[in-house]
Length: 340
Image (cartoon, rainbow, N blue to C red; front, side, top):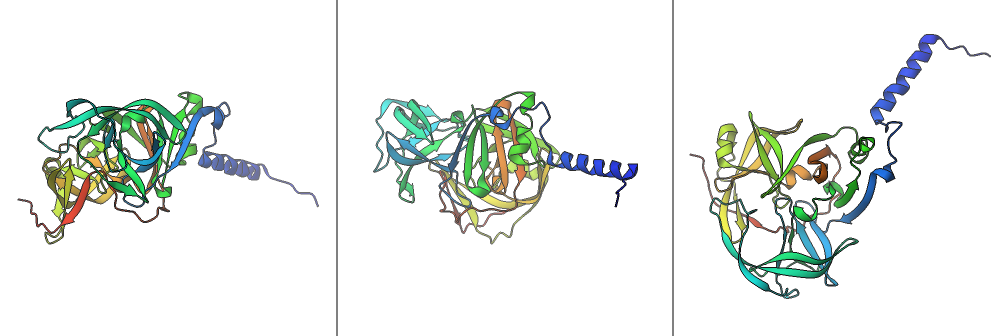
């Protein structure tokens, strides 16, 4: 039996094919192959779990260790411990420009040190400068000593893909050409958001709208919950939580300050809106920070070379339970606080 197709039916079939291709966002015909666009790719499993600060395995002078990652810090900061004793050179008074979370500028004692050999994944770094802080720490995860924190300067030549739901971080080198623009869809899916990324003395920041006002907020994976200064929240405040709820107390470089739990109606990052967000508020912090709560359900690409942040939502979080490990100490105490 012969089959005959009407012109209308053929047009409808063609429309379906075109629509499907638009949905999956296929690369343009003249686009570069994926392998040609990604010239370097290094993937690492994170050592922590849910709500932990990002931790990557490293080796220093052929000894296993771990480092916290914070894009709100600049350099590599180290601490001596019972296992690691870094050689001290050039004793000097170090001003931590990136420590802006207190209103009082602080000077602390530090030492410049040179790490002869450090490996992060398959990246080998020799004669790497670092700052050895005075405070001794004996912190570890699964028997691996945590020796300090590495800031954004190490990562700023990469596009950093944070896959917190799968407990992974990937360092990428992406060709900066129009033919490679499809790579963001490949990495994040078709439904992704973008926003400007800016680096200053206080680390990586992005524009966030709170109420009717926009501010540059830091990206701090060392805090569990987004932090906003009290002077900003007064313009957009919804209400403090029940004052009987325990309040969090942060200790940063041996200085304690209270953080009040609160909620605000919404914040907006690019075109992405977060409603009824729980935050921590303090009168002592000068800048707000998006915390782990922002990253934990997303794929986030910090594209440092192009000064952009891209992100998409993920519905499944496969992270293991956390170990409550953070560089700066935050604990809950029974302190009642009120807004005046």
